[in-house]
Image 1: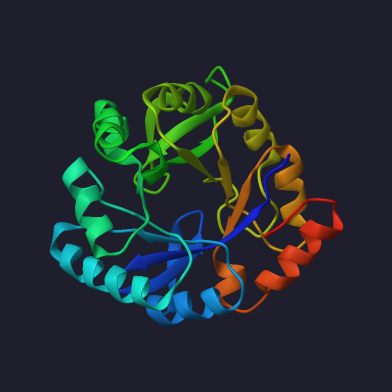
Image 2 (image 1 turned 45 degrees about the horizontal axis):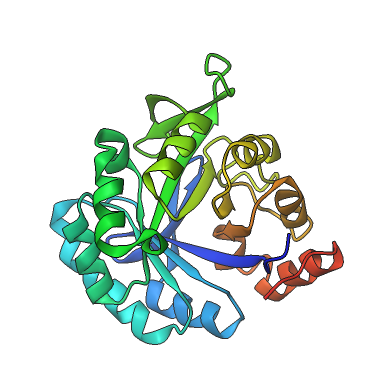
Length: 253
């Protein structure tokens, strides 16, 4: 593969607190984002992803404040998503301390926003977050969803990634709604399907439950692996994940 694999903890933040559920439902408190970010920075995480899972306009300022505090305590790349709708939103996140912005629903509603952000800031700052689930009616067998997997976007997941790549997005965060929070392993078929269609850096998300799950995602084509609850609740450490990846013959940072 040539490039070292990245291990990325994800902070799903609701109203200033980290939360985690199963299949995007039944959210429970997992701690303070600033403290967790600091912990992961010290534990050897390669990057940190911060997703505002409610992203309502009322707590938008709270989110910027928490992002700023998190950015001050971590010395690894910080990606922030949730409620990113315009290039101006990206500008504010970058000013707040984010290194990259993640976009999802707004890009589905108006794909041109990808081009606008890329033209203003470059591909390297924009991550397309794709929440996908299995749907046999779709050409690839996977569909794009919105609202935490509750609604179908009416888009084939692989075709959407291909379009985003043409529009200049820098990276794909592929999250399996079916696997999310189940700890049964990544959806390797979905990863393979997207990897076959796109050359962009691909972050696999959803389903990690044990160190041995991570090499399978990389084998399927992921350049980076992301997890949340197993890190938040101390079930698996970043070091254990890196050891498993290394033992499988892949280079890690």
